[in-house]
Length: 108
Image (cartoon, rainbow, N blue to C red; front, side, top):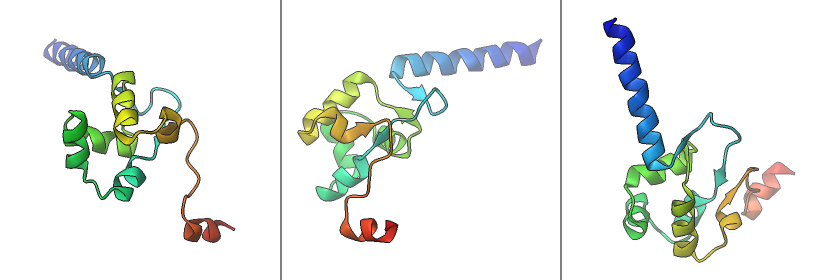
């Protein structure tokens, strides 16, 4: 009985956390790819710097960059406004093509 109760409490806690944070676990459908590492590098911006600028924990930026979580609509708009880019320039359903000549040459 203890194991069942404990498992229910743990699962409820995870569900509540995901609901409140507006995040979806990685296996919740098609992944959302992003260009956050590239955009940060272009601006010499650390995860901590970006997190402070948009008002989230630096871990959140890491989760997004790794694809561990999908952003909430609110967070996606904050990132779009911060980088002054449309959402589709930051997030996509398909992986982004390489942006450097060297990476493109290696593919062909």
